Image 1 (cartoon, helix red, strand yellow):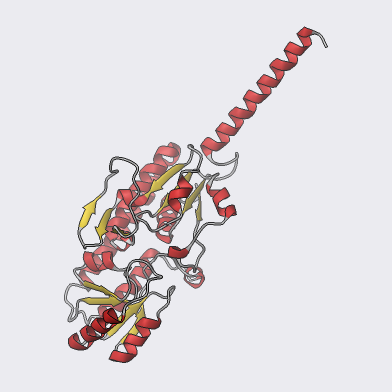
Image 2 (image 1 turned 135 degrees about the vertical axis):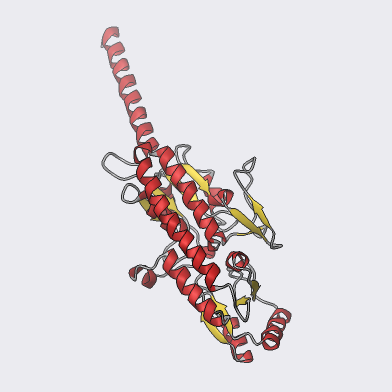
Length: 320
């Protein structure tokens, strides 16, 4: 082969290689092949709902944690990690809720927008003090136990989550910005009405103590001036001490508390035992870490589940 032909073949290979690199970069940038919706991978149910409410049919919102499973104990499969790696956004709760997210996010392509939502809301510390987090300096991760990660149960935080995702989606897909703003505005209006109904429903109650088997309701209690007492802490796999159980039983009997709430997706044996010991009623309360298949099939939403929670609370606490 002549030197001229070798040179032409070499140039051809260089052009083909450059074209392939550009094609891969373009596909990675937009996170979806032509004709397909960009993928948004979200960890928790509330992130799924907010993302869906804003995006409409413009994005494919993919929940990472399977329905009906304990989100605390979940770890993504290799196939789910592969899907996250081709997404436009990876959005997770943060504040130590997803123990797997920290290692995963460091392996993702730089073209993926990674959002730790705990950096955009008001967090409740374990000592019951609120602390604002508006994009703090540095990349440090909130350590599990420093903050309560169930922040979506404060409706104000759901509003902040909506505003954050509207801005992020609009920045990435500006052609849809006007629609995203309209959808976010409508969703926030529903949240504001829900917040007002909580304030009114829990305004005057005979009992203002919320006892639950799992410390998942701190934000709901704080936002509505309720006292929050839990049998176990923030981690759903903790075991309560005999001393804690005895103290809670004494508290229930002393103050005539009639209801102990439990989370359906974790073990409720201790809550049921305390209920039998005290004559109180054990009733489920949904912390919205995840929803079940039946809740999804019956078209349950954050709003409808929170309204069911409100009805249970007002009845248990004898509100008027």
